[in-house]
Length: 364
Image (tube, rainbow, N blue to C red):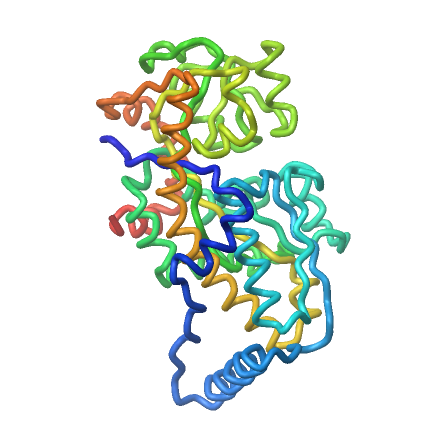
């Protein structure tokens, strides 16, 4: 099973071009029913849209701090920027997004600890969709199960379904203190290594960096390697000094973080789609007026569409650049042995949510 691969180094300046050049429009408000509450919500949405069109500020001024572990020229960085700009546009400048990229506010786990701890210093964050697994995100964990999504369209069938809303609201309903706003993706994730890897057998015995996630740990063990937890901002030096022999990331992040300098071998196994989501703390959400909350939801729909449009094209571009730069890129002609090696972790990590997981699988 070959996956269509993809990449990015669209610079931040291209975000603005993409926003206008791609012909994207702000998503229309969702259809409403005749119920009084829904009718009132529709009126509020119309008021918000009209105010934004007129350039009027929507609600009182507020600044929301947003964390991003990757640089702004990555797929996720550009998606963040699209979201920020649309929020500021639709709110008439009333809502400002202070976007802090390149991990200056810490790793994803650091950011989540801060947000879930209720410190109030970080309001929003772009995270991996499965980052909440270690924080009780049972549904979110299903998105990181190896070889779940057969291609990008399969993922987007999920991300635009009613089921996605159920997944996004899981942490809020569980009392974690955050909620998801929208989904996106940054391409399939692949292994990159210091030494050349031509087949699955070459991974055996290697120390491969993983985040502190049980499914990722189980996957690496199933492949015969040794999972080693290393903070993302320490990964470059860990590869350079031999603390780990390799790691896994989407192609665009692999390049933007300069990992080819220390691990110039990339094997395209596509074990997991790099699903992402943007979350906001309940504390920050509750500070917003209903109209401002509408703004964030509309901007989220827009950013999700933007992400879908740029991701595949951008990733393909980066892959070609990597090859031109001399990175040893190995394609996997038969993914079956990889899937078989991960059979145990697939079964164990979906055992408690078999029906829900099957719904995702059936969306292909």
